[in-house]
Image (cartoon, rainbow, N blue to C red; front, side, top):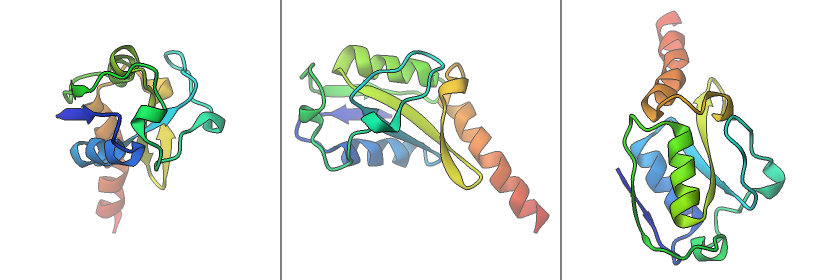
Length: 126
């Protein structure tokens, strides 16, 4: 996928595009960065209606290529390094979204699979 990043986009537009390609994953943006394997504090979460241009210092527009075999850590790092965005990827886990901070070394495909397995199991149990 190519994730478009433009100052005129809202956080929600970027989130929606990411989730279109990775349905069991979502991305959130924060005013403070986090370290690898560290969770993001929701106190610093940006509202989905904010403009991308208002939440970053690097005002480079473009498209970030994201492949399913990229690790969550890589995607988050590239968003920070290239576009100045502090991102945290979440995955669906049974009935809520969880930060992938403890599994940053797993690929987006693996993260999606972790989300799908409980759903498959639940459907099989019916």
